[in-house]
Length: 190
Image (cartoon, rainbow, N blue to C red; front, side, top):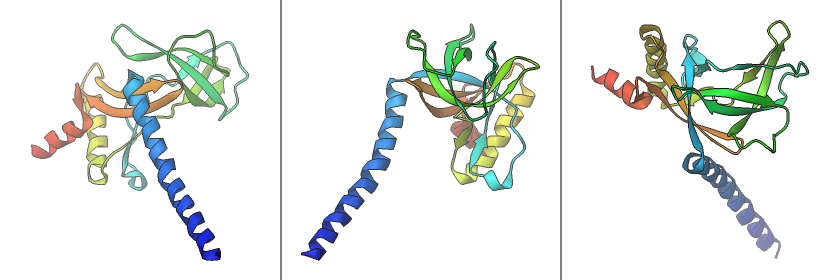
């Protein structure tokens, strides 16, 4: 009888271990399918770190927002509301410490990096600053992004991020309208 209970507990634990990751994947897929795609312009990437060879580190043009509210604390959640500029790139429309019920704009939840009283800007740690790739291609992709940002004016490198109800999914990094995956493959062929 005791082994029967242990077996039932084992089965339940195994099911939970399958259901939880599956639910996480389904939630991300829902954001991609039903969310709104935004293009976030990137800035030059830091040099490659040998301990982080499995992803690309992304810096973004929009990481701060001027605000009259000076009571921002590091790592506090911040609701970042978006709009697009005339070129189709994401810009920050507003930031708030709480979700704005009256706003119909797309938003995501980030963390406060710091507040600068000198510039009256809250600096934001965006939740999608790493793009994971196959280990053998990550370094080449990071070099390609860095080189593309140095060589072309205007900067035509951006991250394609889907946003839905506070959630984000970094779907792709694009260089000159070519997916980073394809861009690295083309560079390998040359």
